[in-house]
Structure formats: C-alpha cells, structure tokens
Length: 180
View 1 (cartoon, rainbow, N blue to C red):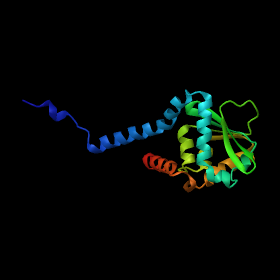
View 2: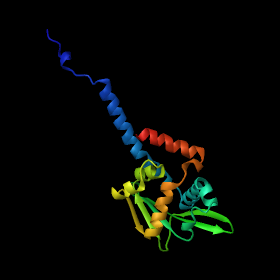
View 3: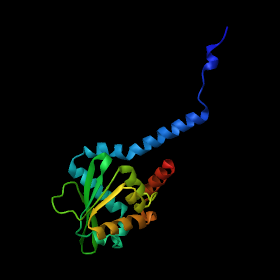
View 4: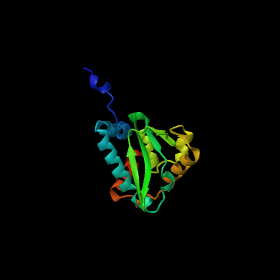
C-alpha cells in the first residue's frame, strides 16, 4: 500500500516567511492611503482644523525661525493621487507670528502643485527617498511656479527631522524600518 501523502510538498519556513513579508509590505503600502479614507469623511471644517494644527505643531521651529517665509501669501496644493485627496496650504503672518493655514476649498490661483501617491509622499516626508528621485521617476509631479516648487522641494529635503515632535520622529522611524 503506497501512501499518497509522500507526494505532498509542504512549504518551507523560508517561503512562509517570504510570503508574510510580501503581504506585510503590501499592507504597509496601503496603510497611508487607507488612513485618509475615514478622515476624508469628516466635515471639511474639522479636516482643515486638524491639518492646520498638525502642520503648525510639526513645523513650529521652522515657522518661528522664518524658514517657511517663502510660502507667505503663496498657495501650495497637495494632491494625494491614490487617495483622491487634496488640500491647499499657505503661511500667514501677523506681527512676528507665522502660521500654517490649510483649506480644502480654494477658489483663487494656486502657485504650485505637488502631486504624488501616499507612499511616495510619506517616503519624501520621512526622507527615505530623495525628492529628485521621485521627480525623475515621475512619482512626484510639481507644476506651477518653478522657483517656489524648488524652494518647497528643497525645504522638505533639508528640514531637520530632529526638530519634529518625538512621536512624529518615532512614527517615521518605524515606517522606515518596516518598509525596508
């Protein structure tokens, strides 16, 4: 009597590990996009307040040191292509106080637009990829005022992530570690 079980090939632990790693990385690539979906269902006023607060919190040092003055009175549109999400950002100032302002509806001229998928934007923001690399791979599209676009791109490339709040640095580090 011959056993039919001898013909069954069981997966090796390496192939299971590889499949798990592949599935995990695919899930990690969908996470930024999928996290925006429920956020986009909130009323616009709440989204604007949350984004405005987050940017002011994140760039507190840069706002205080006038590093974002090139964006005063200028409008940056950010389009997250895979999430079908966009917002408009400017810097306002009164006396010595500078603030980021975010809106979802803007009926005036836009000075520059940055378009990318959520993973590319996260990699750009986390400095795990050079902005020029994304640009030349056509994963980052910059349109409008060329000089302003270059200033924003250089700012994102040069900004000191050590000035970010610890929670943001930890999240960026964890994402960087997990995505490699």
